[in-house]
Image (tube, rainbow, N blue to C red; front, side, top):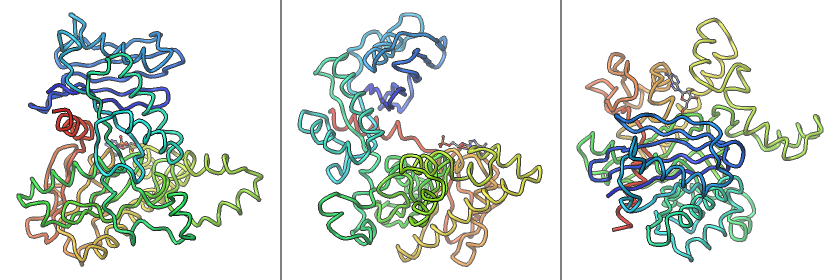
Length: 398
Ligand code: AMP
């Protein structure tokens, strides 16, 4: 099946056309600055690349149209007509408690998506706009599927997802831990089971998705039982620019001291904190490594805080599951930063983690990076959320 995967943001739209039989990416690219001055990129193996500015994209509908036009273009396209697209899979950030798995989109699902908007007011409206644009441009007969970042974590038990707040905030307002990066954690844990040659039902896994946004998941028997992000993706580890967990009391103190309102405070926590905030250098780990190597102490502190944070979650989740068979590293930092992986794993020998420094000296490729006699296996697995979305979409569209 040929599946178009769409990840719509408020002014951007990432796309990939995949063949789910061969798992091959036929074409991919990005529409940016939708509603502003429209920028369009398109790449397909062996075909001329498109990188165009000032493309008219007043709304997401024109962006989808630009994608379809490029895909069927006789010079550079990869399909003869739009009819070859069997289905469209949409990344949707928040499925709330309504969606514990991917779903085919109909009127009822659209209504439920709208109901979940207050849970992710920045992301879900953009995802809904993307879905509506596809239906408008491609017609109602092409199946549209929603794949949720939160769905994989719906198996968490109440003990892991309940916040110690008055219970009515959960019952009435649905305030609880939801967790994110679910599609990535699901993909890499399935791959881990394949790599280890064991049924996923028999495995206790800790999945470390470490990128610009980072989260850790405890996955027992293929089911997420705990995760570090919470009601929003602000919780858990320090990230590129997000603070991760802090004492909520800090907010009142800083707001009073600096005359900030809640919007300004949240802007600090989301955009000016994390490793960027601590280092004052950058949110990008490559820049931080260079700065640390040049003697910048705050960059060193930010990197150490990050590896320390991940290490603590690994310990906590091994305790939560009563053991761990394998630890998985994925996403930008997890896939590329050998030093971070080493720093995280060092000191975990007591629980059976023994790294192989040579095997760990690798980037962006599936590999076992622990020593042969390591009781706990350590795996590097590049994530592939688009493939997971495409496979779910093909399954539901059948
Ligand atoms: P992601 O959000 O998964 O795309 O990850 C993006 C992050 O990966 C960037 O902020 C970089 O800090 C990090 N990254 C990418 N390549 C490298 C690398 N070679 N070494 C260290 N960090 C990297």
